[in-house]
Image (cartoon, rainbow, N blue to C red; front, side, top):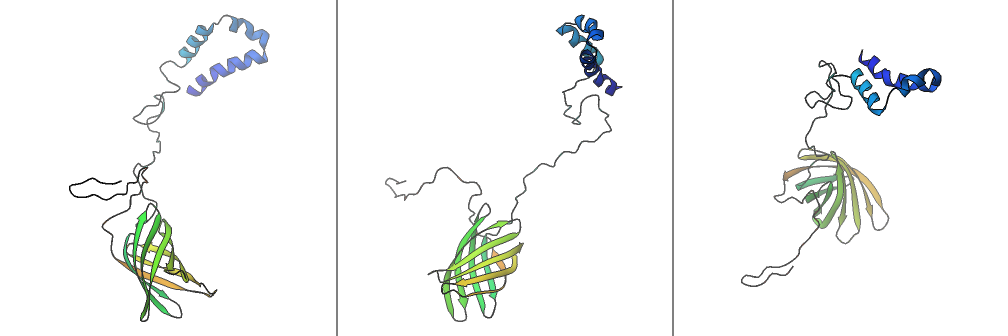
Length: 209
């Protein structure tokens, strides 16, 4: 019945174009207000554009019908990797990295110390995380070696592979795994701010910014 109502006006207009002589008398009897009243009578008690906020449908829709509504809430699309980690890099040699990571949104950065036997070097870290997939570059201070990690993060554990490159053109690959001892106490903001102030306060004096 509702479908028939919905077709009433389009069929009248179609007939006006297809049979102008036959429909001329009907349309000439209807002013703008007359057409409005005719359509209003055909759809009495219904609204074509109103959506009931209770069930998300027009008032004439079957109350048994279901409308899917997306679940509300905020879900972070990446894992949190902030904290202090101990990583093992294993190829022909074994290296241990004591690494502290920070996170800004999905950007990851930090620094630590890499130990190979009795030798150790400072390293810097930079990369990003998408979901639980971590891409991280470790560069030895001095720039003579870079380790490119492709790993997965699961809670306080990390595992994956890496490719390494030296400044003299040698490359090699290996496996990596590690654990987080604790999360950092200070987190970088996930939302950038428009103003950054740098300064030093002096007791009893003025602050510079």
